[in-house]
Length: 149
Picture 1 (tube, rainbow, N blue to C red):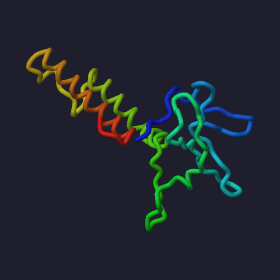
Picture 2: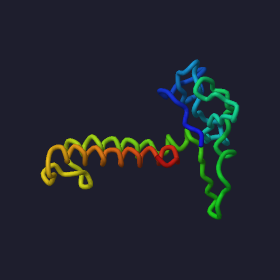
Picture 3: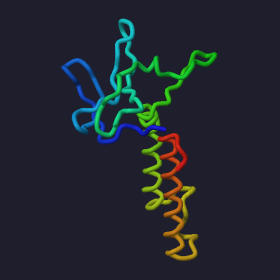
Picture 4: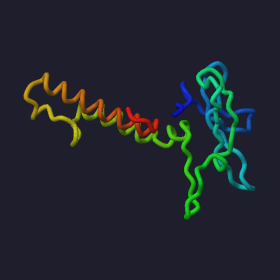
């Protein structure tokens, strides 16, 4: 499975009229933008990379409307996008929640985090909190990439 576009992503206004999400790499690599849909609507467009594209260095993909990329629509008329960049955008709140849980679990204690008061020793607590943090981080990464960690 391909990975999401690397680098620091930034929203930019391009040519004074188009809003694009992209990253500084070797030039501005577009991640996502918008295309007019009717008179008062828009749909996201994503850069789709071919197999021969060095995505880390070049934005060599084609900006493609989300409607063309969606999986077949179900009986309710709902289709799903399974693109690395779209998946990363969709799980951003989960990634933030995982990081907050790790940071908070180490400081404030979370319900599922190891409890220092119940630990056999400081060393055992450190080991338990490390393992718990790894589990939380791996779950968030798996959700973002769609790959087992």
